[in-house]
Image (cartoon, helix red, strand yellow):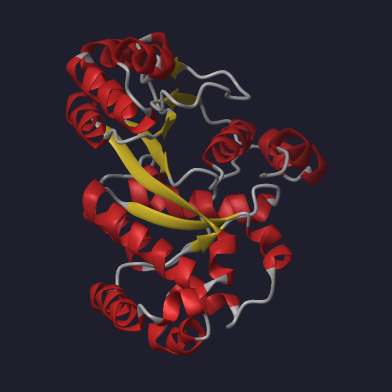
Length: 295
């Protein structure tokens, strides 16, 4: 059985840096990691991928050959990948012998991922990155909430929303409320006053209120936070992902009693099982040096 993450999010949210830092973090823990790039527009990755869609089709070639823009070219690439999913399946098979942590950099690949889940018995969690600076402007924050909600409904996977670059949030100004308001997505009616102060948002007051009501009514959206340079921040997110995709259950007895012990109560899971891995994990300087800073 193979466990993994589908890393998604708007441009600039830190997907590439996340995959780079998270893959190195998990490698330090002794896990086998493979990064799969399914974004044909991401042609300047700072690390080597186990599988890259550009080996099958390139966005630049599609745009030139078919006179398409970036959006049309991406749709074409995803359609082409879906029709040639056997190529991706054959590439994945050698990687999934044993437990592997897969990362998919995503671009409109829901159908492809769903087929892979069924064919290859993958256990995936969607990790949706949102740039934390959007919290500093109420209108952008509401937009981020809507994007997160629609993505959760669209993907139909276990889902974790993440405010990335949380260490940089103070650079963008003061928050109207404390950080917990934004991570827990508390009563959005409190944002109304702040939205009305912005002339760009005031004329859409009624629409914004209705959208906030939709988000509140669903009650599905909340956020974890991430500073990719902070081992504790990354480690906490890893625990959430491991619980979401079932990795924590993979090495225990399959009895209902053992499953219930983990599912029913928060546990201090033992992720760092050997002294060697523990020593590597505790070296903050080494981890920071390897992962770098999100831009």
